[in-house]
Length: 264
Length: 258
Image (tube, rainbow over all chains, first blue to last red; front, top):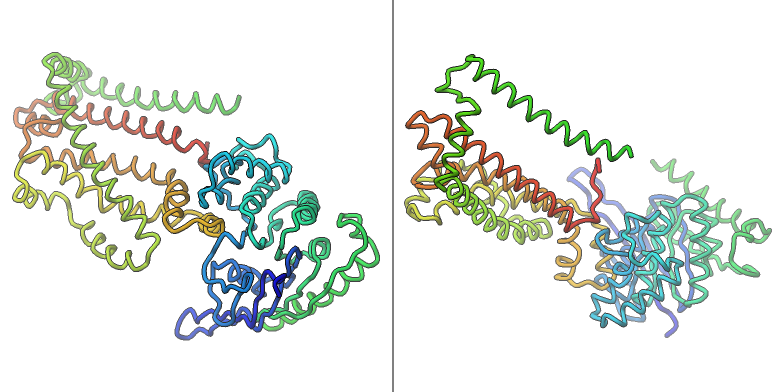
């Protein structure tokens, strides 16, 4: 059991009705999932299936209506440094340099200055931003900003990295570069990662395991193990085994989206 | 290149707009179109400024007025900052203070002058309180608004990086809101000058508002104009200094139109 980093059991999220005549909205239903140490788990689902709500609950930013979230066996009640989050909108602190942004979490933990400068430099190098330590976020491109956000979260050495469509705002080429970078980082650092996306290529490229979610109310529809031979890179996007898996997930998501459209 | 010429023309245009106003003033007065009792000529105003500068009273009045504005305004800024921040972050706190603030905000400050005189007499504190009353209740709501509109994701990021409640205020909310707060401060310091004149027109024996009121009794319109011009000049300088200060303390801020 000890190698299970994150365990979500029977999680449910119901949003109360906005007014008297409104109906309450079940966003998530019977969610069970497990992420083991050093595992890269990706959740894919149609838009509006509650993916972001789920990751926010795990991050402690929202409360579940029922069920529980355990990190290393301890229940989650509030946000904490053990669950590092990376958001689609980067959310860097614009008044801090790249270096100071990456140091932020360590500063909150009151790590001594020389130590936190050293750690920050290390992670800035890991994401390939050496030389940009003193730049301000406004001077960086979207891809570079997201590199800083990843370094900032990793520098804090969280138990698990929660990533909410982190590359969703990037252009297609930058996104590919970032995906390979993340694949490389996860191999090297052996971080435990839970990643959310609606991009099927991205999911297969990165994941050890994929949870496919259904339309609202979001449930887990299927769990797929990804066993690809060789390096995780864009070469693999056109291999038969990749395409076969893509086909399978596409069919599922297509059906869910179709049904979701009919629901409305 | 383009940016530079844009900046140059900004300064030029501002200068031209002042020139046009002064030219119109010259035509109206030297041309004899208006009675000089109602509108003195630039020469008259200049002479009265020089006269007051020579006997030292100009500097003294400017100093005392500026001091009153600054003290009253600093009081209100220091009080408004934490209260406005708390209002933006806590529904409960907002429920307690907001209705009271909204109520007081609509009371005309002029109507409170008699009470302040009754409670505080004609000492300096009464002047500070008038300026405080005039600016505080507006500023609190502006601070609250500015803080409410900062990017929530930044707060979420900080919390998941392990920031505690107090750290979120000091390390994220305050710096994130600072550019907006500087704008709020700049606006309210302008209003502080309005309330200064209110304060100095009643039971004062010094200050620019006082000399303007006193001059009315003697029909000394040249002195009234001199007083008004000084208030305008000090206002412009304050505004300039605050803009400069903003550039220095929030160099990272991206402003629309920069």
